[in-house]
Amino acid sequence: MKDYLATIVKNEKIAENVYSITFDLGEKAVVRAGQFGDIAVGGTHLLRRPIAICKVEENLVTYCYQLKGDGTKKLAGLGAGTKVNVLMPLGNGFFVEKDEKKVALVGGGVGIFPLISVLRAYNAEKEINAYMGFRNKSAVCGLDEFQKADRFVAVTDDGSFGEKMNSVQAFVKDLENGYRPDVVLSCGPTPMLRALKKVVEEAGLTCYVSLEERMGCGIGACLVCVCDLTNGEKARVCKDGPVFNAKDVCL
Ligand SMILES: Cc1cc2nc3c(=O)[nH]c(=O)nc-3n(C[C@H](O)[C@H](O)[C@H](O)COP(=O)(O)OP(=O)(O)OC[C@H]3O[C@@H](n4cnc5c(N)ncnc54)[C@H](O)[C@@H]3O)c2cc1C
Ligand code: FES
Image (cartoon, rainbow, N blue to C red; front, side, top):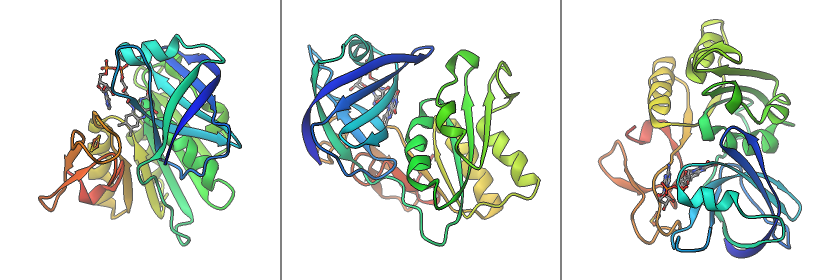
């Protein structure tokens, strides 16, 4: 982990309310799929914003973010050449075992972005099925990446792009047709993860989920981000996660 003074190379809109920002770190970073960075947006915003790492290409690292509140709006206003502090890589990330050959990615909303990093890391050696859900057609993005998967299903809540369903329902449809992945990796809104947890429990599948929590320090020191584990203990999403075995976390 390092606090880079990174230079913005590109910061552009890729879908309704969604931006892609690429930083030049000045050196190559070693990143595991599913890790995140803590981006300083400056001004009066003391706390950095945690955003999943989407792509790493040599010195360049790309994050995709949805406009939410003041911090992400401020970020969207920063142009090429601006220098920004980016602490990364943070968290544990996704890890696919050697014998896990068939990988299902189930994503929703901004949860699709860390799954792009998984696809890029494992596409050559694994059979990857990607099920991605978007609010509507104008929110659809990342198609150029996900189309590289062995199977890609995009769905929307209103049916304006792909079938009208969520990504968990799209995944279940394939399970019903005999598909059985060795591992399921997921990121998305908590209700979606909760629904997926039920599905994988019933199907007896191994599943890892990446959680989103409000964060303070991002490095395990402040305990702002704790979540409940099924064994009654607590874990820090920033340091012990954000990726957990679905059976270990309360959703
Ligand atoms: C590990 C991780 C990865 C994430 N990856 C992405 C991503 O790839 N793309 C993306 O668009 N968003 C991602 N998020 C959510 C993103 O951090 C928030 O949307 C963002 O911090 C909102 O900041 P804001 O100032 O615009 O909103 P405000 O609501 O004004 O933020 C106020 C404070 O709350 C925190 N906060 C607000 N919402 C969230 C949230 N949902 N999760 C965590 N902290 C929050 C902010 O960091 C800030 O400290 C991720 C969150 C986590 C924890
Ligand atoms: S954000 Fe401080 S411990 Fe996780």
